[in-house]
Image (cartoon, rainbow, N blue to C red; front, side, top):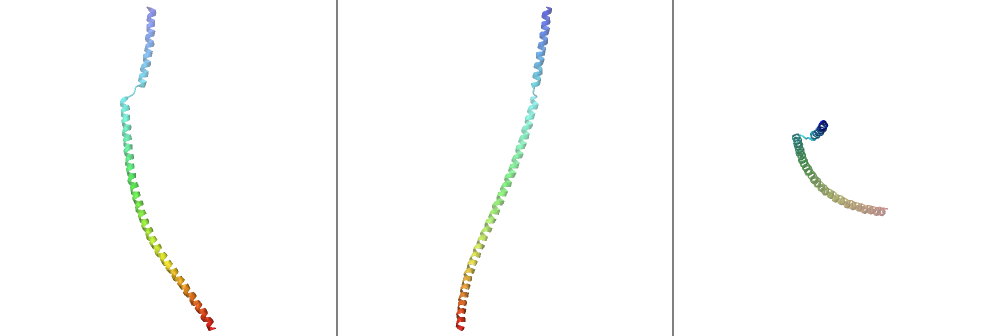
Amino acid sequence: MNLIGKIFVLLVFVMSLVFMSFAIAVYGTHQNWKKAATDVEVKRKAAVADLQKAQEEKAALDTEIQKERAAVRQTLGKLETERNELQVVRDELTKQRDALMVKDKEAVAALDTAQQNLAKLTSEVE
């Protein structure tokens, strides 16, 4: 019995070491599920807050874009009006220039006629 007792004592010692290693493994892999759940909830709330902030920024940028587009349209309308007015002025100036050129040609023709008459009269006088 002495040998069987020693074997049982050794077997109890070995099994206690095995169970102790199982206990350490279980403790090492144990998670605090309440803490994990609250961490997830905190992260979700932070993500929701970031999403709302991003949506507000997007809305602000959209309104700014609309204002910029309206300003561009208004400026474009003013520039087109100014261009039309300048075209009208250019057309009027072109008409005036053409009229002055016609007048200039008539004056040059009259001057040539007068010079020819002068040359004719000068030759008659001589």
